[in-house]
Length: 279
Image (cartoon, rainbow, N blue to C red; front, top):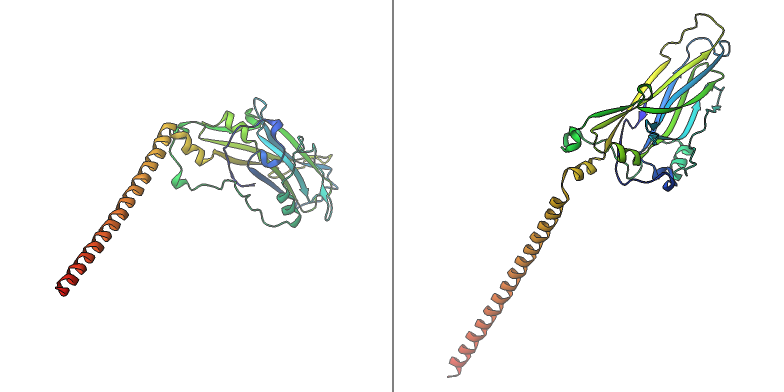
């Protein structure tokens, strides 16, 4: 499974050399593959490997999903974690400190502040991007290039869980797919066994994990509205605000003048009464 199952991209294009931390890359995603063995221990069957085909590039060589961390739990003996190859994070980007503390404490997965959540489709904005085609990025179809992370299962008696953390390469999607309605990114995983035993069968030895990618809804709204319309709307808002201020000012001035007139008239009547009494 993938967490989350929908990712979003927005912002500005940044070169690879500008990436210092994993947060500079784009939205975070976590893949988790669980395999179980309800039969004989693989110690007696031969050597087994849990593999994940990670789409790290699109067809033209630009980054797609940047792998940050690969972890295998189980399949190595009680309490041991396996080592997978090749090593991820080849750019040696800084790991988010909050992510590091989160993994140490192992709380439930929580979205990062500022990361886009799954939007309500009831308010999904209508724009030019809605009319564009859908694209699938899949190594099996030749629309993406994959690196295969292979994790040996030395002692596979019950279950093993493979987790891969990555980041959506925001700049690539802005450059290549900003006018596309939606993209489907495919990650594949399988188990391979090298054994001398004949008629060895593996059930459900492969799986496909799709993730949908969209342009940020806020960016879609901005894309669908010309800049001069936004400028006119801002100017109209300022004009309305100025008219309201002027109206309030005139109202206040009118009330003050009316109060002053009432005060003067009362003073005049009072002086006339005093004159009449003295006469």
